[in-house]
Length: 295
Image (cartoon, rainbow, N blue to C red; front, side):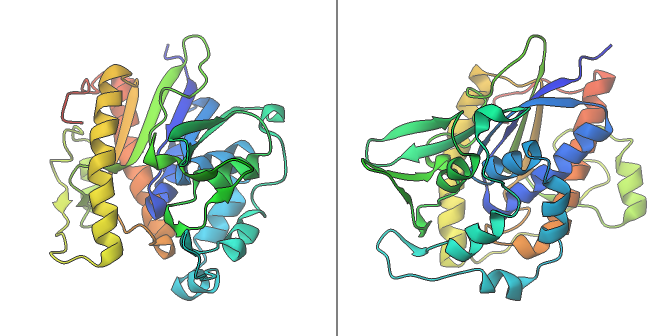
């Protein structure tokens, strides 16, 4: 019988992190019990919303907003640290992250941020959970960083975007890592019939009945920076996966959507669900391929 206690690791990746919602839903539908969560940036946020029991409300909200709604939440600033203060956005997000201390939650929780002045990783395992999330999602040059008495805290993705070495473990649990900025091709199903057919195929580099999504040949400044940073992050993650291989690894292509495509929430959640469903079914059947160096 498969042990179904899970230590869940959720990577950062901007709007791509919404796919974590779909992955969590599939894990629960398969009877897995998430005992601990570690996340970076958007992974830290979704993880926090989950452990606080607010995931259904957040999903309802995020799938109902459009581009205009997102723009209204952006408060621009001329700060040298970032062009978005984030006060409007974070005030909205507070609705889903009550002011509670991490150590008083029923599920172990860890969030990662970066002390940019002292060049070190900050691991939040206690204290106010909102403060931990706010620091973890402060994308450099985009959101203004979190100021403390001695330093500035920014997005944890600059130092540890897939914190599989920071998640709290329990005996015989299953380590599940979800990487939403994976350097893998993005395939999109053509229709529902193909989707059903694909479920009987093996998940080997997304081949079979899947259609390849044509990539854009031009990038704006944000996209160029995003993809450049993700390539660097990808190399760090590959090295970490070789050192600490998870039992279940769920890679979601960084081409699935753009960094700020939050208005595509339902589509992104569906992507997370589809990929998680295939991989978990293979894991339970004993046919999940062992991670190789080209993860």
